[in-house]
Length: 68
Image (cartoon, rainbow, N blue to C red):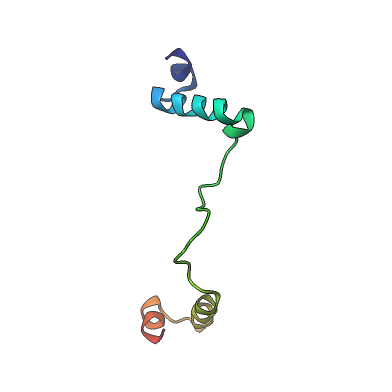
């Protein structure tokens, strides 16, 4: 594929971009976040607050893990 070579990407990447363009037009080619849509095992806000408080006491990760 000449277009892939001109863009400096593999044929597979060019095909993926073409499929995105056909599915959603130019907006589909815009940069997208790699952040997951949801995190079911996300650390709770209370746990984050406790960890942050212990980090402010300059404790090590090991000590924090043992305490929590």
